[in-house]
Structure formats: C-alpha cells, structure tokens
Image (tube, rainbow, N blue to C red; front, side, top):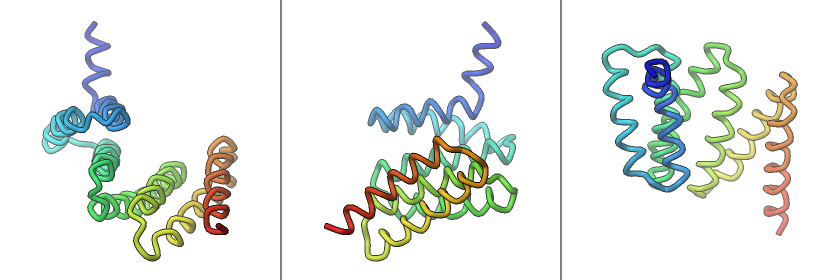
Length: 149
C-alpha cells in the first residue's frame, strides 16, 4: 500500500534498513541505501533525519574499519544531541562511540571508552532506562574484568 511505501521510503526507515545490512555484513547494500538517503536529505532533510543518517554512516564506517572517520561523526552528533537536550540519543551514541573506540584499540581508547560508558550509564540511570543501564553496567563489568587480567 501507499502507506507501507511511505514508511519504508522514509529516511529513518532506510537508515534502519542500512543498519540491518551492516549487522549482516552486507556493506555494499548498506552503501546503496545510505547513498539514497544522503541524496534525499541533501534536498530536504530535517535535523533529526540528518542526525540519524550520520549515525548510520558512522556505523558503516566503523564496520569498514574507518575508525577515525566514524569517531569524528560520533563526536559531532553526540555534541548535537547534547546541545538539543536529547539525553537518550546522547547516551545511545556514547555507547556506540565507546564500542568504536574499543574496536580501534589505540592507546587511550580503553580509558575513553570506559568514560563514555560511565556517562551513558549515569544518563540512563537518571532517566530510569533500566534495561539500557543493565546493558551498559554489564559492558563496564566486562571491561573491568578484562583490564584485571
């Protein structure tokens, strides 16, 4: 139906589709979808759609081991989310940012990743998002255990 097409053609739905392709390691399809989103947003893109698009692009760059480029996007969009008062988005971005730092594994990345996860945990605790708080706390526990060995 037309409604279904409108939903699947929306930038947000297309970004989610790209993220599914990334998780399935189908990076070529993820590129195609994100190229389409990028073209449509260049013409008329709400800030929320631009941010969601850039988040998906950062995930794709990280999957391609282009860590510095991915981290630059995470820095930008996390600042934007923070400036706009989007606490949940900022905390979710910090989790992804931390995971890219852990993937890159350069000197200082472990400490920076831990700081991002601690910030995310504090934000989730403040907003009562207990499921996310448990996930982040578990990840922090794993980092503590790996640092101890």
